[in-house]
Image 1 (cartoon, helix red, strand yellow):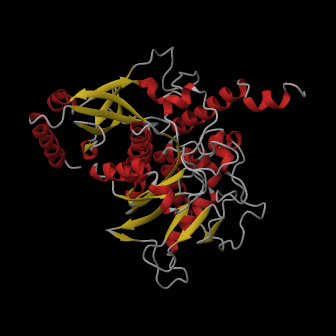
Image 2 (spheres, rainbow, N blue to C red):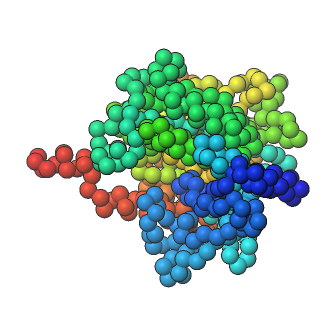
Image 3 (spheres, rainbow, N blue to C red):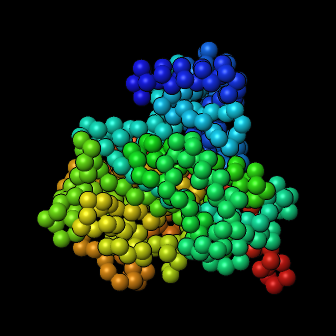
Length: 456
């Protein structure tokens, strides 16, 4: 947003504050896990002063899901004293939050308190760095994400107090495209669609997915940074609106071994001067040479960025044969058994869909990792292999890393990502993966107790 447009947005907000229409501003950052963190500012303070900057503790980019502060991060620590970051509001993201009374939201970039430079391992900064590389090449990235989640009969507080046991989805059967069953869920999904649309998120629609209680939210494609912002806000809104209706949702990729997993497919193409450059009408599939190089980069470097698509132990429980979640990093033409699917072949909408990512991914990191790989494919002039056909669960080549430890090692050893993102960034997220592994390995699970209590 230009300075003039930023000032216009601020002036418009001042008018709403003056009329009493708005009294609260959510000033938010995006953390490593893709969650919104931040403050609620009184709207008058925001329009008078807080719009320029506010502050937060720098531990917010060095925690796990439990908000614990593990050792081993170079960016901050107990020894360093956990200082401040500057939260710099991006007024281009200022929007109403219609599901909360009198509230607007703004997303912030994180700056170093002393140098005022972007914090390099902040998720928005990581994506911005790859977009800047693309811009130097003359391209924009246009992307879209799909959000899948499960909706449950009970609310979050009740489920938590019951120890997350005996979970019952809101429906009793597979509701993929099922209109009658999703009618029963409209008390959650209708306000979700309408509130997000009113907040400026270009929602297309919702549908039942391939599991009992499973839903999908689709948002129209946009420039990559906007798409990541939309995804993050929509995920947050889904939780809040379901909570308001006394229901719980989960974005856990595999909440039960007998139920289907939840993904977050990422669609992507490159544009130049407002036109798609993945298109070549003379090609049998409508794919330009540039698209083929980009896709070849996605394939070659898929193990390197898998951690950004599957960041937790549970993330890897999705990757099972016959589950619509892929097991191999191959590409195919409109075939949902492959890790990468060519969509809309032979049309101006031709694009690639990455089907590897789970519903727990951080969209900024997932998109940045794929853009880095695609850029490298273009730089190296990689040749694209022929598309795979048939059942792509068959075969032992191009396997997705089998677990978080393998994905962590591939991330740590990735020369491509270190060149694209910097050693400090890769070391930071390698440590995040190590923290997840260390925490899981110290915990005795229900599975172990039930299996071995009597019989071992």
